[in-house]
Amino acid sequence: MLPLQKLLSDITHPNTTKILSQIATSVTEFSTGDTVRIDIPDETDPDHDQYHDGHGHIIDVVKGEITTITGEQIEEPRYRIRLPDGEELELPAHAIRPPIQ
Image 1 (cartoon, rainbow, N blue to C red):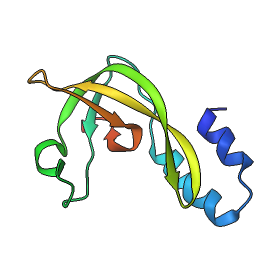
Image 2 (cartoon, helix red, strand yellow; image 1 turned 180 degrees about the vertical axis):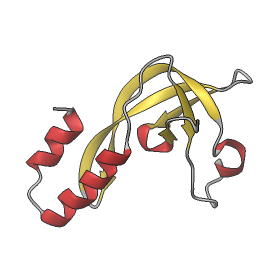
Image 3 (tube, one colour; image 1 turned 90 degrees about the vertical axis):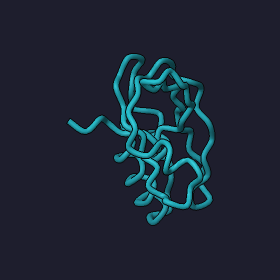
């Protein structure tokens, strides 16, 4: 069982479990070397225009951070990503997706 899935199974409030389950199923685990797509759907986010739908390669899996969602805390991995121009970003798991084929 993945750490996030175990955490989800330990939560008893039905609405919180449903919300966190949806988030957990939408987050894919990646490994060093994987190609990923950056997903910043919020058009008001200052990084949206520059990075949304961009692609890069995972160069490192960084220690997880605690993210608070609906009052519950979950540990979310962060990934260091190298873009084709050589720029490196560190993004939380919820901000990356598999590449569009």
